[in-house]
Image (cartoon, rainbow, N blue to C red; front, side):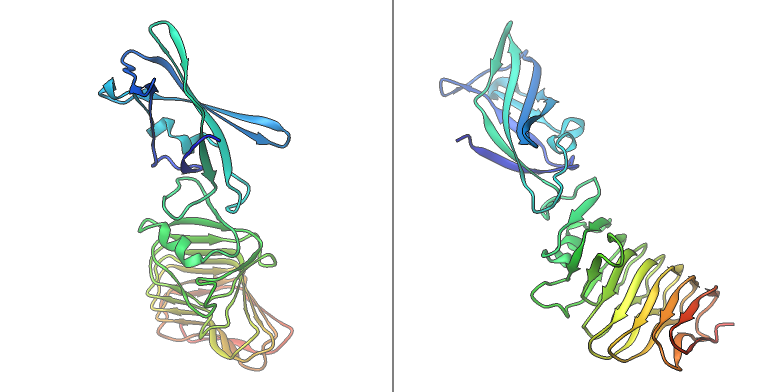
Length: 312
């Protein structure tokens, strides 16, 4: 069986491949080689999937080396697996023309994943349920990025469901819909330009979502639910700015909560949200510490309550 030389991430341009050529056990001087091509082949749906990528000589060439990097990086050319759990294995060979003769190397293997914690993909990232969400968020680095979450329940730490998921700058968590994707851990936003979208947040921890001094956070089409132990607020915005809470639902079912939403010392937009199952309490509180906050049309159904707005 051919040797596995490494694992690459679909969409990643940061990891290069270097391949050194030998002939009869000695390095081959590839100075002047042309038509340098890496050919990858794997079986897919009963037929071969072929990927062809041009390469370049490593300088100095006397070491017998070729390189695939930058615009010709392997990760930019290999198709993305359908799941983070699916690893595609390619049989690979290098061909080149030298002194009028065409050479083919011995075959070797490359593994390709949809997303990996050791690299930062430039493409949209996907994560399957069962992996620690905190590891995936941390791997995005200081610049942040988007993680697509499929169907299933995700936790910051799968071994400790009550551990909060901590998000810094630019973290965008996008689900497959509130009925499909659930984040079961509390969430703490502390940075700028974070986003929760198209998912359900259903924590059994000490709180639901807490945004503390966050800037530009967006909550769109999120179903905030509380079904276990009591909680104070499903969503608490503390000293935040440029916040958008839009098209979300806040459901009280099976456990007590003081309110669905608290926006304290915060400004932004709260509109088109649905509050369901609450009793005769202030389902949302916007105290007078909130400045320049716009509370647009919101809907209270299947219960009483009101939106307590002192910001005006």
